[in-house]
Image (cartoon, rainbow, N blue to C red):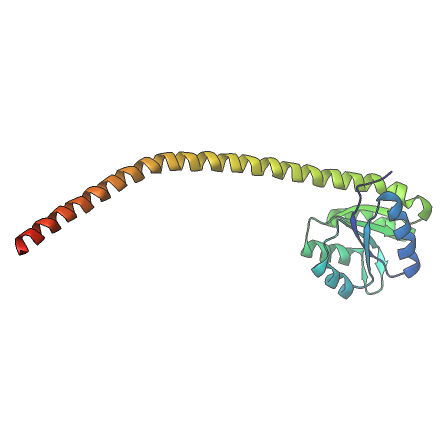
Length: 190
């Protein structure tokens, strides 16, 4: 079940062993993904300054913060980046509804880890399809705008072009009149 190549993932995880397991699962989903890891609020904020992930995957419970904090930070930075929450502890499943209300796109248990890729892939496909649909809509809107702008520019040019011609004729006649007046003055000065 492969997603597009070269997806950019940001993993927010404070257990090194879990980062390696998650990395292995993500490589089963997407060919040649770029995966970056952060383990604290400061490293998350710093990463977001230089890296734009396609999807953020965060553990629920981290040292010094939790998934709610991660969602808040991500949404403050760029509310279009999808956040998926994973946890190894069943007690956090009670928070699933609130996490989804706050903006998480999904909530998954880590275990069994060897099937996590199969559980994440459909959600990732849905996220990517929704983003593609948005981009397609934007593309259509841009084409409409460009067409409308071209039409309006054409009409403006046609309309104002006529006015500009009239203005140009008026300016030419004014210049010609000034020139005739200047010629008459010069004639009488001699």
